[in-house]
Length: 375
Image (cartoon, rainbow, N blue to C red):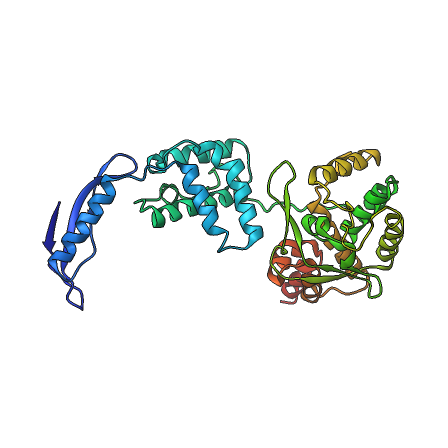
């Protein structure tokens, strides 16, 4: 450990530095050379601070620091994002690091965590979402508790295995014909209207569950999307928050959907206590996601479409596919015009719409080939 005068100096005359050796996260003795300071006493003072921090590790449990991080983050980030981070932390991070002192978590521990998640065959994109949350907890510890390194950053993001072939994830959707077969077996008014709404609007699951009767304007035939349901725990505790991108939008209803929801409202109004603040699907309480999924799967099986079961989110893809087919049937094939129309309806940017759904336009590459054929 020593303070020395560097051979070169900055433009403003800073030349004093200090150099110390310390044990890193892997237990190796490594050197650290400071930035340049103007005066020798400044360099000595900073050297003492550096050594003090190294000699007084942060003896706080990981979960204690994480709790502090979430208290702080709640004032800084969007509420729905905070809830998502909290859920990812509780189910995919906390179980692996609970009880450990945060200053004792090293790169090897992070790599072990990454390996365990990979074994669970979680999607790469999801794993890297968990990575971001864990990294932010350590960044917070670096700032508030003067933890001197971030093993998450050192370990790096999750990467695709060398033997994995990178292919674009295929979008699954249900055709209009299969949807009619599916919907025809549903006799319960609630579920019939719910799946009609999913298929003919393409709204997100959380938006559907948060929908109230006052959000539906039967005079204008539009649905206002201005909130979503964010679940705090697996037991069903939830909170109503802003939409995914914090932007409200309106979805125009087809005649068949307008009639469906109007008839369903007449049916629901007979229940005691009905009011416009009731949830369209769930009445005075939000439907639970697992109930929707269970019903969906049962109806697919009842319709003998077991091999065509899609997720709730894939009803959203199905709606876009339906609209593309009808657009092409009308004799139009301008994909940019179509995605401009659909971006506001779906609550996506034009770029995202094109990236996700462009391949569903069968004529997209035909236009390119036509150009080449003219050579």
